[in-house]
Image (tube, rainbow, N blue to C red):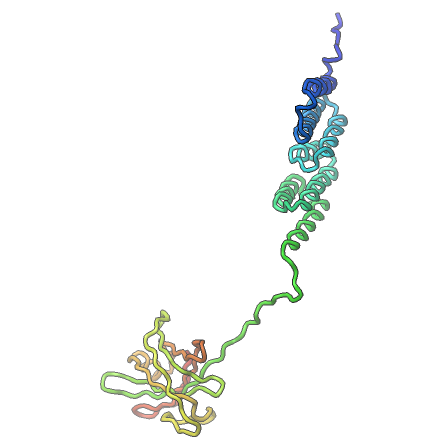
Amino acid sequence: MAKTVRMSDDLRLRALEGNADALAAAPEAEFTDAERIRSDLDALKEGAAMLTQAGNRVAALALMWSAVAIDPTDLGGHRRLAAMLANSGDVDGAANEYARYIEFMLPIGDVARATMELAYGAKVLGGHPALREAAEKIVTAVRALVPGGSATASLPTPRLLPKVPFRICIHDDGDRHWMQLEGGTSELVPTSVRLLDRQDNVVETRKCIPLTPGQKGHARIIEGEPPAGVAWVVLGISDEVVAALDAGKPSPYRVQAKVGDEWISSVLVDTGCRLGRRPSKIAVS
């Protein structure tokens, strides 16, 4: 015996009937505009789910298009519509739906939501052209967050600090050694010098004494080197430093000169002025 099918047994009709009953049962005055929109959205989503279950994807898509038309910024409706389009093989339609949602987020200032939705869409669909275009719109919106100015601030150009030249003499005083430095230039006038160890710890700091123009310093002038400098100073040094200078090796300690407000490196020219003349050597610190 054939089974009698009532109209209410059709899932598609039950979805529509259920929505109509729900709307008819509620008094009109009890709904605010926001509640009415939410009620309509929920009814359309439920109807689309039932129609999808019944195999009528075309009608289900029509309901979801209606849902996003009622509230274009509803995340649930948007995601469901995009998923239905992708599952039906309409990848372009799904990508355009993600792009549409992003375009609605940007004018209301929700750049974060737009960015997250772009990432979600790219994860689902990959690098679709519609998503790349949406990404450019997000970039433009982010740039607009920073007000433009008439002059664009530019980064300072890196500069190489010069090195202060010094001629040096080594003097013995019993069990101690002293290094006399004479140097500087008219552009690099040292006011102090300091001695640093291997860990850049300051061992000693001394103020420089100015040399008057034409005043002859103690250190002899090496041929090819500039004449007497503009200041001189004496630092105490260790046997290790003297041994390195005598061997023509780099000094284990560094000498820095203060020029203005900056401490900068120096170039030490050994004049050989110590007990017994020695060939001139150059050490850079």
